[in-house]
Image (cartoon, rainbow, N blue to C red; front, side, top):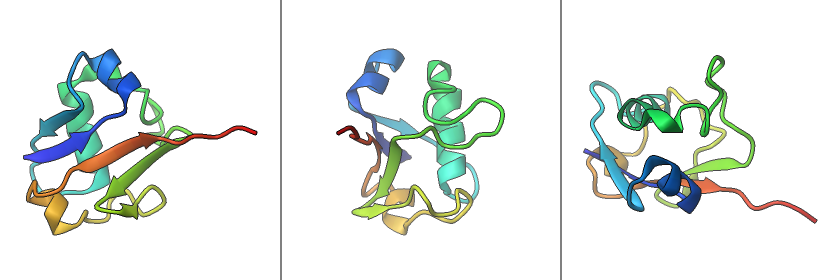
Length: 98
């Protein structure tokens, strides 16, 4: 089971708690985890990444352990601690403004 920590606005949209779990068959990549998350919570489709291109939405960041993996290849394997469910993958809404 892959653990995912969601920001408050996605928790509200999905009617779920702060942390959810998904199952990924095969390699545990960011792409595979997001596919599983959107399959389990279809109301999140289009909120984290674009519907057609699957490109990440602006101001959304992904953290595996303490590493920002937002700009890494979405098909790169996530750390074993994430794949084993020891640590959660964190989805964070970036803060911007001025």
